[in-house]
Image 1 (cartoon, each protein chain N blue to C red):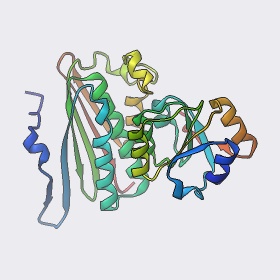
Image 2 (image 1 turned 180 degrees about the vertical axis):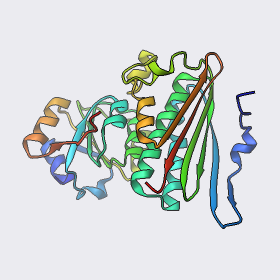
Image 3 (image 1 turned 90 degrees about the horizontal axis):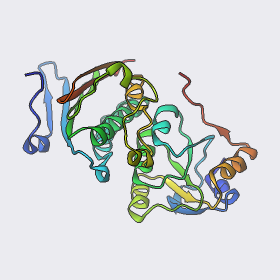
Length: 164
Length: 118
């Protein structure tokens, strides 16, 4: 099965930090994001930003990761039936893995085009849904992989190099 | 330009961050569309907007925007103001419309934000 298992609430509460044999620390977090949860929108991105600040990630990288995380979080809330954001940080890279259940994206090339949006009028009134999200996430990142299956899921893997 | 001067020029009322009014901003961006703020702004800038929901504060938080002017007399709810307070973001509200507020600040020397040209 292509879809990885969704995190259970128990897993979400776990805060994983691991150290390998070379003493390299990896921080890993996983967060659930609910469909239509506009009230809590941005809380996950805010958490991720706080961790990066604590660890001392370069401010310009913090900003790029935060913007991508926030766009992704809004996308899950607006477009999907719910999903998760996984955050991985080590001295080399920062990685966001965003996975949602839902309608998926029929034409990824079109969805990546600036200004293309399927968001509702209500969402636009909140200041979102301008069709800038996916291209903006790509622009912020160093590596951007998107895959989707219509009626099933969308998965984004977004990588930021800490050395650049 | 100091926020205190902006408050005075726009005859604005401070809603949060009273202790940070000596903060300086060098440029500004005006929009009601947070999608555009997230996509175009690449600067620590002053944000002028008529959008008063919590997403405005979240967007500012993610972008390291520390100062927001709400226009056309709009006023966010208490929870949104609290969120701004928690993030050390100065918010103020002016009765001026977006066009006039921007025009006043521009005429006094505040420039437009450097945006990302694609």
